[in-house]
Image (cartoon, rainbow, N blue to C red; front, side, top):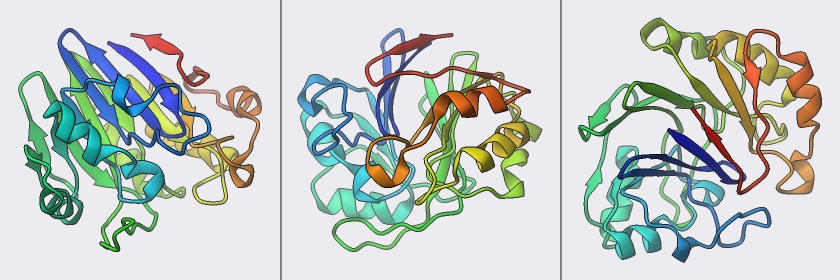
Length: 222
């Protein structure tokens, strides 16, 4: 599996013909590595509905016909916007497409879409082949982050570290210990001034997992 960091909290997971796009905030993202029209995902998975996460979902999904998974309230809004192939799980629900599956887990945050739809934030446990990737979404530190590893061995955790709107790099060190992933890729930092932080310092402080720092556009292969 290839994990490409697209900037902010957006990632593309690729294995064979499966291309999963997570939180495609590209238009208006000063750190975006690509333009929305350059992507051809087979699936789009959303953690929550804030503008810097739902991003270009509608335009990309309509253009590509990608299968979209979002918590039920966001899913309903997307369908009203004319997006097809939308699945609408809630926290704890799993959607299995055969080549890839995604389970929604709790995240401590807030979420309202740009159109005003209130929704519950989530983390995403994505399985492609024999690899498991856990995108924590936007979250503060809370002890239930450790529950994911009770069910799954997490290969890579995609983890917010920027502070202000989410946990900062200090709390993220504790989160990395709770999640227990083999590798951690930090995200949701340095996009805007309020979330500027030192990713190298985070890397130095994490002891139980390998931290892989990616610049926007870089790819990490498992």
